[in-house]
Amino acid sequence: RKGLMWFRADLRTVDNTALSSACSRSDEVHAIFIATPMQWHEHHVAPIQIDFIRRRLVVLSEQLAALGIPLSVIEVADFDAVPDAILSFANEQQIDHVYCNKQYEWNEIQRDHHVGQCLLNNQIKFSAFDDQCVIPPGDVLTQKGDPYKVFTPFRREWIKVYRQKDQAPLPRIEPKQSVSDHSSSVNPVSPLTLEGLLTLTYPTVDSMAWPVDEEAIRQRLLMFCEDKVRDYHEDRDTPSIDGTSRLSPYLATGMLSPRQCIAALQPFFPDGIVEDKQGPFCWLNEIIWREFYRHLMVAFPAISRNQPFQPWSRRLPWLSDEALLAAWQQGRTGFPIVDAAMRQLLHTGWMHNRLRMITASFLTKDLLIHWQVGEQWFSRHLIDGDLASNNGGWQWASSTGTDAQPYFRVFNPTTQGEKVDPKGEFIRTWVHELQDVPDKYIHQPHAWPEAVQGNVLLDYPLPIVDHKQARVRAIDIFKTAKEMH
Ligand code: FAD
Image (cartoon, rainbow, N blue to C red; front, top):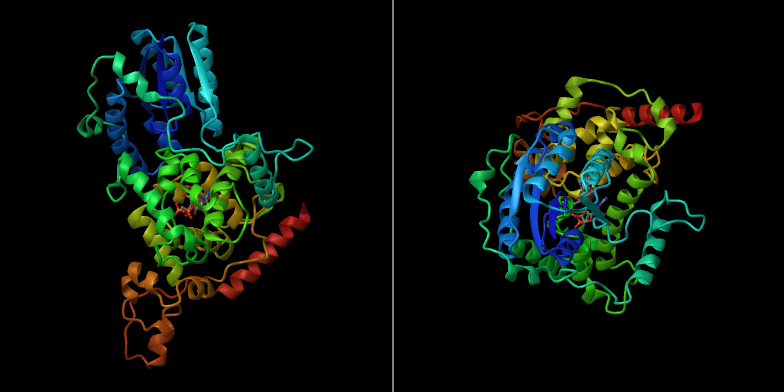
């Protein structure tokens, strides 16, 4: 029996349901990754994420080679071309069973449906496993059997299901089946080289700041749990503190599984999960948010088809102003915390969660620019770009989502800056023009030259909107759209 493991957003050998299954059910296993540059382009995948994936494929091929599994990387234009590509690869290699882990986005579901049919028509089996979430979508439901639309009751039920599901308090960081048993019976396999993968026809942005080898990822997780998770509840909202895990790129691409994260929390929950206000639970809560958005995407497929969750929000008269949009994108809004955050995104491909909330609120409420424009910009630049979490975050911030920020709560970018970066340390890291501005004026820098009667020159934009007026305008427009419904 010859199996084919089709890697997509699960680029790891550890705790990989489909890979374990392929290994335990086959005499010989091949692996494949299919690059689809046109599709990536259509999905606005960030070049930095593709570089990150490309580097990881080399590591993955080495790990697989050690298990006797050759990895092939092939390139086709888009998802439409995938069924034929898989079929001809399977025929060439005489594969009789293709294995993969499910992806839950609409286009990915359609692709898998077509692949499944095409393989079946050719007497090749196709198995897709739930692996991306700790609890599979569809398994956390209300008493009536409906999906949850509000996070807190979802979390309560999620914990209940989790407790019932796992008799052992938490899973261990080990492959589910002994993948390594597979290595002895097959010929030596040569891993891929990065040069060989340079040909992927997609622009790339250097992702070297993010290590991709297994040990480095494991260390990042363990160090976070040893050194930082205890203080997570206090540090997580301060962008100048390195207080969050920065594991999102690994979770988004499946280099790390959420089960591995929970397993690393095990020392804090020796008798199972306890809901409290401490750091470890607070961090687990975020992992559950990740699950919530995935479950929602499966229950309401419109989410991954560019639809708002709240139908009334279709009536919102979004504005289109290229100059204001460009100011937001490039970090030239005249609001220091917004500008620092947007520049962090452009320079590193990552942004702190609190700042994602502030910048998303600024775009959708202060500038009244459609959340989809922001969602797309984030996706094009984030190394952790992930449809469910990105869409969830944007619809939360723009008050168009489920369990979203109420529309009348509009972040004040100045007071938010004072709250999350009181001394302006984060701002000064990214907005060099404000380097010399004293702490007292860092959040309203133009007050500084005024205070010293013009004795200093500030090369920094004036605020592009009057926040007070913009707030009133947004509340008014949102209220009208909601009442008209
Ligand atoms: P930690 O605080 O260490 O959290 C651990 C993990 O939990 C994260 O790695 C992530 O996988 C998950 N997580 C944390 N917060 C959230 C959340 N609010 N929603 C869903 N999952 C969460 N996250 C992405 O992974 N990809 C995105 O494209 C993305 N876009 C976002 C857009 C907006 C407008 C907002 C408000 C949030 C977005 N998030 C996204 C969620 C969150 O900002 C990031 O997951 C987090 O900042 C990653 O940093 P970390 O790994 O240090 O997180």
